[in-house]
Length: 141
Image (tube, rainbow, N blue to C red; front, side, top):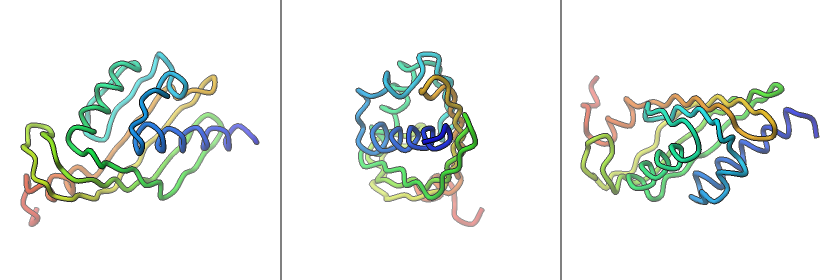
C-alpha cells in the first residue's frame, strides 16, 4: 500500500471510529498531539484534548450524528474528503435550543498526515443549510 492509500485508510478510520461510533479512545492513535483542527461549526481546537471537547459538543447536539464519506482523494500526505453530515438535533448548538429536527448537509474536509497521524484538519460545511434546517434562518434566503 502506498502513502496515499495508507492516508486514505487513516482518514476512513478517523470518521468511522471517532465520528460515527464516538469511540474517542482512538484519538491518541489517530491524531497527532500537535493537532490543528478547524471543525464544520467554525470552531478551532488545538490538540487532542480540545478536539475531544469539540467532538463532545457535536455529540451532545446530535447524538446520532453521522459522517458519510461521498468521495476521498489523496496525494501523498494530503487527503480531501467530500461528506454528507446527518443527525437529529437533540441538544443545544451554537446557542440554539434542541429542535428534534433531522438535518442533512454537505461538507468537505482537508487533512495533512505526518508520521502516520492526522496533524491538520480543516472542515468547511454548508452551515446555511444546517441553520435553515434547524429553523434558525428562513429557507427563502
